[in-house]
Structures are given as structure tokens and as C-alpha cells.
Image (tube, rainbow, N blue to C red; front, side):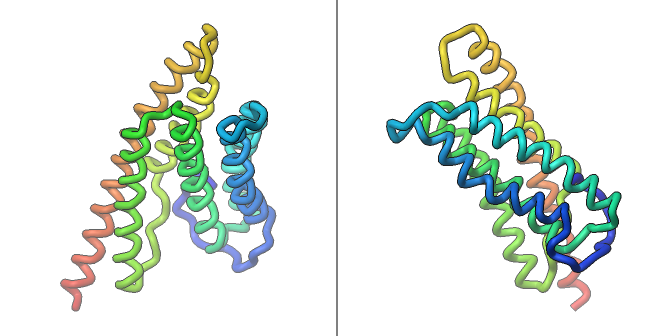
Length: 202
């Protein structure tokens, strides 16, 4: 879903936007299997992997639009959407790093950010708070990374098209990583302020 500061409008589970998010989550293991097929001496299924990634991106855009248009914004949807985003990022990191398309240091950098956020969410949960909504910066970071990964997958070759894909892929990856960390730091600052205010109130 796109980021909007909107209130929860329904407690229904099986809404069309939620079903789209569930389908996107179900596509994560399929995507990872397609990407890793060459590693285990299987056929090159990169084209299918790119198709799954593209469909995920379309679903990510549409589910938020439809939820707002049909008044179907739900608490479950607010959980499913960032979960799907994060799992696609993590599965792509695993697949591309395993295939030596991404360097280990970049994967470690992005995983360190995820670990930082997990600690922040754990602290919030201990104090009885739900995680804050995903902000626009976080969505922009994911957007850049989800553009970078298909391009870097296409760069796995020696043709001029692969070279061009590498240039654009690394440009998106650079911006995406910077924004990913920026959004993460802002998230931690927000959590820190909330916990300090809570401690002061006590």
C-alpha cells in the first residue's frame, strides 16, 4: 500500500487489498526459487523471476489505491504491506548475493538496518506500542531498491544491455541504500522520542 496517514476503516480480513497483499507474500518463496534455480544446476529462470517481481510491484501500488477508494484500510493490511516489502528485499538480497551479483558488504549493510529496526520494534512492543506507520522515505527507499534488484539481475551477463543495466541498477541501489538507512534512523529517533515521553509521563 502507499503511505497515507489514514485511519483504520474495516476489521475485515478477506478484502481485495488484503488478498492482493497475501498473494504478494505467497510470491516471495516462488521468487527466491526462480532466482536460485541456476545455483542448483537448474534452468535459467530469471525472466520468470523478473515477472514475479514486476507483479509484486504492481500489486504494491494497487492495494493501497483500492483500500482507500473502497474504504477497506485495515489493521491487517498495515501489517501485510510492510512485511511483503521487507521479505521481497530480503529474499532478493539472499538470491543475488548467493549468485555473486551483489557484494556481501552491501547485503550486510542492508541487513544491519533491518536488525536495527527489529530492536526498535521489540522495544516498542515491550512498552505496549504498535510499530509506527511506514513513512514516505521508507517507501521511497524500497521503491529504489526494487528497481535496482531487477536491473542488477539483468546485469548478470556480458552484453551491452547487461552493462547498461548495471549502471542504472547500481545508481538505484546507491540511492536506495542511503534512503533505507535514512528512513531507519528517522524511525529509531521517533521510537526514542516516544519511549522518552513515556518514561517522563511515568
